[in-house]
Amino acid sequence: MDNSHKVVIIGSGPAGLTAAIYAARANLAPLVIEGEPSSTSDQPGGQLMLTTEVENFPGFPDGILGPELMDRMRQQAIRFGATLRTDRVTRVDFSERPFRVWIGDEELRSDAVIIATGAQSLMLGLESEQRLLGHGLSTCATCDGFFFRNHEIAVVGGGDSAAEEALFLTKFASKVILIHRRRELRASKILQDRVFANPKIEILWDHVVVDLLGDTKLEGAVVRDVVTGEEQKLAVSGLFVAIGHRPNTDLFKGVLDMDDAGYLLTSHGTRTNVEGVFACGDVQDHVYRQAVTAAGSGCMAAIDAERWLEAMAHAAR
Image (cartoon, rainbow, N blue to C red; front, side, top):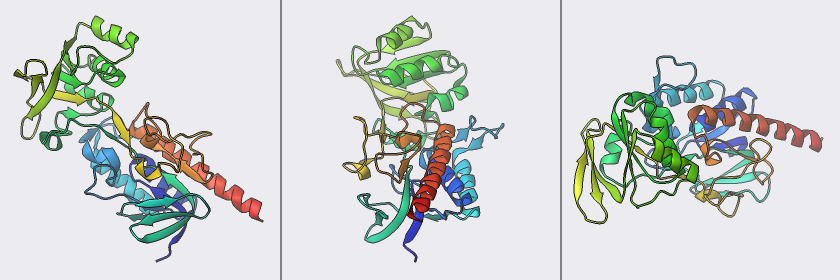
């Protein structure tokens, strides 16, 4: 097997696969290292593999299942000449070019690297989460809020994300219960004021979610008072977890610049601090976190990589 490549793409969510489509169409024959199916942090297809209906991706007026959308992107990338490997990158060396990327003991070399490893939502750690994710349990109000029109739902968290999700969900839900384990919110003052002023939002202070009810769809949540230990059931049909995200960047610690939360820092589009290494999607975006924005930045990363490779080739002549 040829271990030298023009472009290696690490990650295969909307960002990585869009980058693969554009890089392949530019005759760069990209290798996409998809991740491993058994992993929660870098599974092939990214976070959309954990969602059911996607209704806000342009071009699908009737919606499309998340896994089907990712399969279509995958097939499109393969059609134009991308090679996909279902493996996990275990080590990188970006200190000199060509860059080196390892899958176990196997060393790959690449003139340019595009990182699209994404971010994972922090979850509650309940056994029932795996069963109900995408079936009433969600980590994205923008993605799924529409499905809960006139329902009573809950949001877990106390920071800016939780406050924003709760406020957004009042557009659809008849009632939103904001469950927070402390007596005060961590959200910014302006968001707190909006939450307190919204008649559709009820705050359940000093409570944590200890169980989710339902086999094939969410039928309620069990919450515990952290002060008294008393438990009660909430009859909610939707629960949104908004306790933060964690970018999948452990591989790049000490190698690439990142912010305090671990997101890769990019400038001039998708460029990292290492020339020839680009980053796109949720691994460098902690603001929008949408499939369509990830796809857009994947396109940008492929174009940035293509132009950079062209400039390097021109300089070498």
